[in-house]
Length: 200
Image 1 (cartoon, helix red, strand yellow):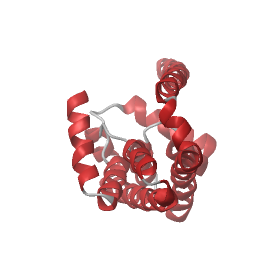
Image 2 (cartoon, one colour; image 1 turned 180 degrees about the vertical axis):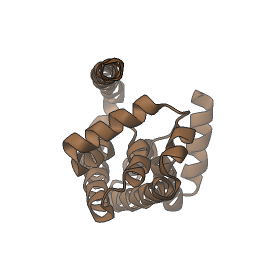
Image 3 (tube, helix red, strand yellow; image 1 turned 135 degrees about the vertical axis):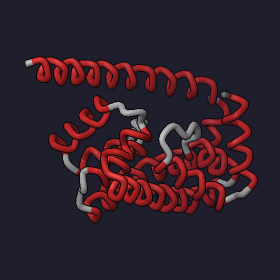
Image 4 (cartoon, one colour; image 1 turned 180 degrees about the horizontal axis):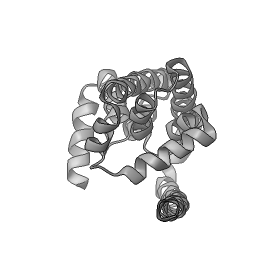
């Protein structure tokens, strides 16, 4: 898997700016795609810090365009397409639906900004017929906030990042593990609650 990811990254990297936009677009509408655009964005920022904000803009536009395509997939495919894509995992859809009921468009922003798979929410947004303008605004804020934050950080602290990259990777890995443990526990609790309701 590591070699596959490296190979995919090399293909996108060889395409330059176009590759970054394509990478961001595919990741936003294709569940299970193994390469988040942050990796290529970071490499390009470090190679050419003066273009960092341009790369962030391209990444944002590509990602939101891909997310909009995911929205259309959900809108015209409905729940059957969601069930097919996610292997009939109804619990996953119920969890996403509950987040929409509780947080509305902020759920899209949260998935766009954090490591939570954004593509699940792009398709689910279409299935649930969320207002497209709200979806678009939440996606732009979430994706833009994430990618511009990465680019701004590397534009100002790129050289320091290169020197201490191993420590950054370890710290990021720990944060991601903690984040996913919290998400898993919340989802597990939500699933148990859903199952109990069904039994009642």
